[in-house]
Image (tube, rainbow, N blue to C red):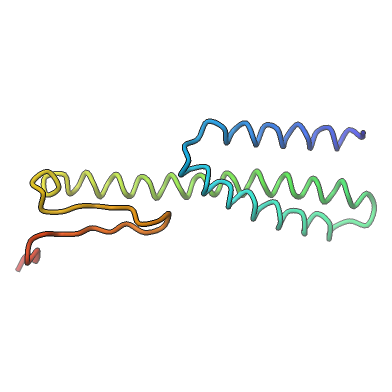
Length: 121
């Protein structure tokens, strides 16, 4: 096993261990980002060299997975912060049972208001 292959395996282990401490929601976004990054990185790695193509493709896949995983995690954290900010801004309305906030899927929040009008004229 070459030096590069050993390094790639070590990097892959570190990337996988980083995902082990996340919650289920964060793991889903990170897995999608890492998977997409690995595919794109593998394609770019394979396309950029004629010598030692397997090692270059593996290096591209690992780098793509790491970058994709990081970006997927950061985007998920940003969306979670938006949800927390919305809940904090509407805390009094929610506590009076005049509104609810619900996450429908990974990308959509629904705010339901129980009053007829909420417009300030």
